[in-house]
Image (cartoon, rainbow, N blue to C red; front, side):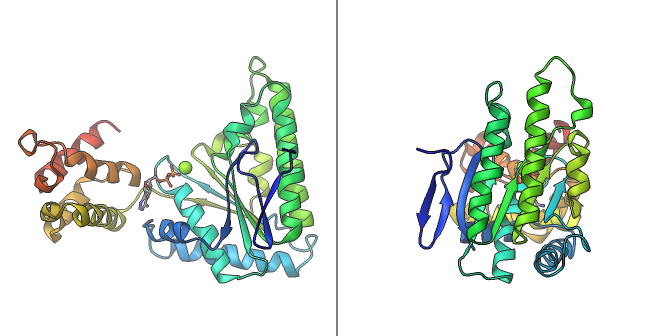
Length: 305
Ligand SMILES: Nc1ncnc2c1ncn2[C@@H]1O[C@H](COP(=O)(O)OP(=O)(O)O)[C@@H](O)[C@H]1O
Ligand SMILES: [Mg+2]
């Protein structure tokens, strides 16, 4: 298989998901990503603002010269682990394409920076060049493209902070190659939209941060979001285990949401699952979970986070 293998789907070719650094490739819109968007609760209006910013940016880039409005088409989502960055990024990719329909359809490519960074000596740079300079460039030449670079600090590591012992020359070259690749995509293809996420924004090379059109800090869920996440998670469990419906009372959800302050969305959802196994008498039957089990599980999650 060549390094630029493209699989033809309908009249749009998708990059081969087995290429180094390609975690996922699909056409958009996509119902799985639509559900992802709906499953994330953020402070009022935050998702709408994200979407409006992305759509306006794409329209401006297509119509206004780069020299006048230097938009790179890059949005960076930062925040603690488990606050929903990756999920909301996938959902945003879907939403954008519903707002800006295209023929040929939009393509989505998720880049796996870990796979690129772990390539052996000298290979990182070549893999990055191949992915950004050839595969994504060829894909974007045919039609619009959303690229998600999850945990971008792995690929665009702050060069100033590199110690000399790791393998800095190779890392430097890979970072340079990624920046050159992003610049080239931005210059040549106004309909490429790049979403990057990071748990460690301080570890990102400033050259990427300065290219980002928007940096959005995704917060820990507030009380309203916590209550919504709890209700969403419990509702899914009740659909399969109706006995768990005692958790769905307004009172139980209110108290649990108050109790869960400081937990991220991932821990919150896991705490609901953990509640199902807390009571020894229930013998692991989720039908027998109680509101107190949920409070205990949330308390435990807070102590250990
Ligand atoms: N604000 C939120 N609303 C609803 N669910 C959330 C939220 N934040 C995180 N989650 C859930 O937690 C899990 C992890 O989310 P993820 O997108 O991987 O977070 P991150 O990329 O920030 O580490 C997912 O199942 C997601 O649905
Ligand atoms: Mg993530």
